[in-house]
Image 1 (cartoon, rainbow, N blue to C red):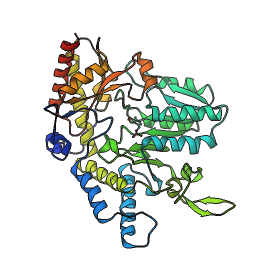
Image 2 (image 1 turned 60 degrees about the vertical axis):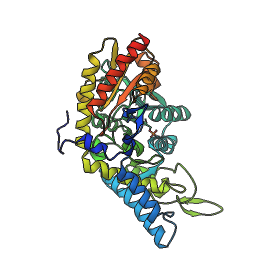
Image 3 (image 1 turned 120 degrees about the horizontal axis):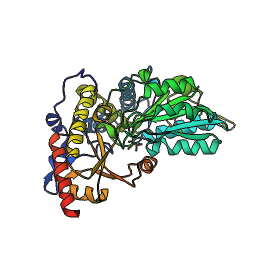
Image 4 (image 1 turned 60 degrees about the horizontal axis):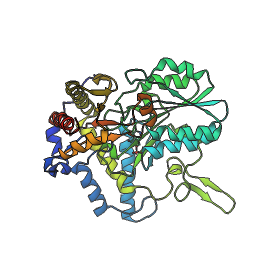
Length: 414
Ligand SMILES: Cc1ncc(COP(=O)(O)O)c(C=O)c1O
């Protein structure tokens, strides 16, 4: 388990920051165990959004008037906060996107279309979310490059022994991998994989959608070239994310979206591109959302990402212990010390959707489905799983309610 460098967090106290928990669902207190899908929002973020709209809202980088300058300062201030959040060498390497998915597509299109071809290989893992699988599969096909996967072992962890086997099939040009799996909670050894990718002359693309909310991110320590994440999974608003990229790569790349703001000069004959990050931020950006994203980064940093990570490890360990009490429950993925606060499982003889519906009537919200990981489901030999996921506001008592709900599901469908 990670060493604790910030004080243990007090989840019951933090819950008071989240207005959503003031209501009841089906006359029961809300046990929200679906934070891996999206996280709830604290007052601090909601108030930052409201204040920005009420006092500083205008379009950015356009006007010379006071309000536009205030809005630009808010937007660029958020960029700075997010650069610090991932320890980026420069805030100019931080590109605001719509979400992690758009960040990953940006790299696949803008880097991949130009740099990949026959004889090259794009390597992903069997553990990827569709957002870090489908764009690469598609761009590999379009460019004639090969597409390979690092397989999983029995524990749901990457079998890195297979890396050198995969590399025999061509020139590895891209390695795309998540830092934390949204299905199994597996924490992947991205530093090792980055080092290997660079030995091959490949770029390392990290999907941190599930990691950034839960653990401290340091792009320099990870040794990656690109890293994407979404605001909405880390207590921030929807419709904004970040793609961090190494400056020299971003500068060499073609743009992804074309239009206003991303240009240097537009002539009848030709258009030239603006500097990074503007080159990748065409059109009106999610301005207020970026400000809210910055407020979410402040909120998490004040609590301490190490404390969040530790809290989740403890909850995951507790959930695994409690699930082990139930006969006929299959839990997928690694032991608690090597996973974030995500637990996927199936109850023998009961479809995951039926389990989730019984739990809903108990006020317990969990996810049932393929979690946008159909290749992983194929590997596990199931169509779907149940998934309970935890965050800084999750209490052990809510895991007890999950277990009680599973007993109930057994009675209903048994
Ligand atoms: C690991 C992982 N990658 C990528 C995504 C895509 O995130 P978004 O839908 O915010 O683009 C998710 C969302 O669930 C995820 O869990």
